[in-house]
Length: 110
Image 1 (cartoon, rainbow, N blue to C red):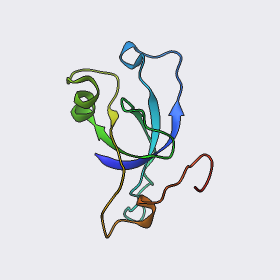
Image 2: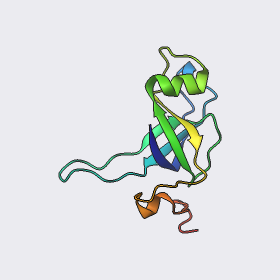
Image 3: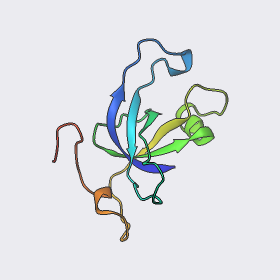
């Protein structure tokens, strides 16, 4: 799992049956700390069963955890990531300042 911020939405008129009726959001991981020379973490497309809004902080799960949270079961489904929580507050003294910033990436600063 990771913490991220919703930065966009994916619209696909043609998709496999597993994705029919599912909202797909683009989530940018909040933790940009990385070893020198390694690539920046890229955004992830995640199924959204909770109705997260643009700019909100979310918890994203991968694999079996994502499928169980979204469908109530594990199996061979066409998505690997899902939003499993919408974050209200983060209480972590050593967390980067941008974790608690309220910022809408589309419309700019709050």
